[in-house]
Amino acid sequence: MTQKPDPDLSAAPNLIRAFIAHLRGLIMAELNMARAEMSQAINRAGTGAVYLAVALLFALVAFHALALTGVLALAALGIPLVWAALATSVLVLCIAAIFALVGSRMIKQSSLAPKRTLENLRTDLSSFEEATRV
Image (cartoon, rainbow, N blue to C red; front, top):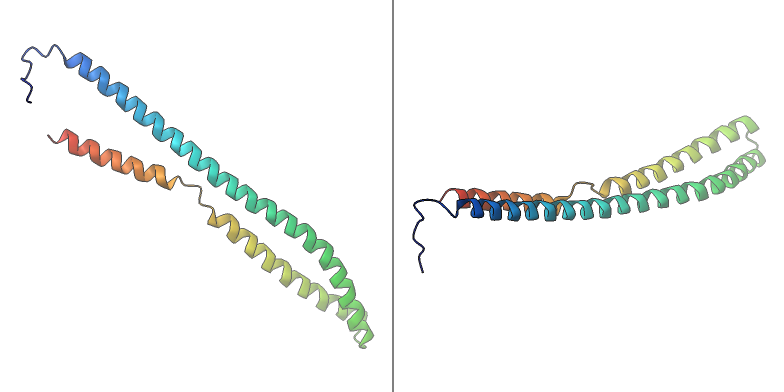
């Protein structure tokens, strides 16, 4: 069924109001989705940070015990105490660097960009462009 064009455009204000209401609803829905997606990403990053902090705490305690054990073992082998302490410290720093790299990778893997929302916005824009070409 085709509709005749209204030569006096009396329905135009109502159409514009309806268009603006739908556009406002679409924008609000996209913003809510972006907010939810950002919240999920922040939660993932926060969880990764907590795991990193706990790992660092346990590593600190274990490294103290390992360092003391290493220094005493090297000293028992006849290495001067200063060199034994230095060698153990270097080893402990290498292990700490490995933990730091793993933790930073976990945080980087949680992308904070709202990917789904951006894709939906691209789709909406292309749909809007197609609709306005008519």
